[in-house]
Length: 71
Image (cartoon, rainbow, N blue to C red; front, side, top):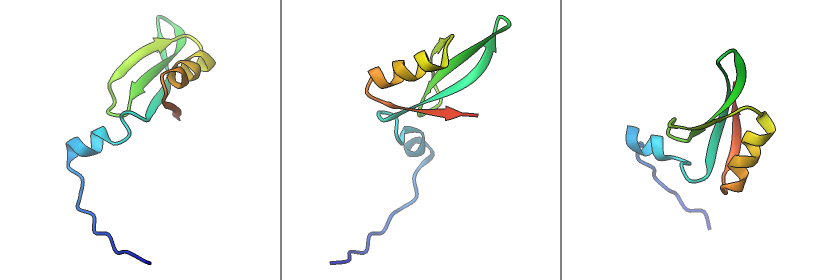
């Protein structure tokens, strides 16, 4: 019942799109001398900035994605 699967390498564009509909990254940053939390899509595009970590994670989950912290 074992199957051998051969994978080819991902193109840079394919790699950028990996997980784009499933995950969003939350990264702490600074804006106007305040801590903020920036939400990025899987391809690195900035989606929005929020003032609270828990609110950022909740916003990602409300949009059907899994939030991941970036340090």
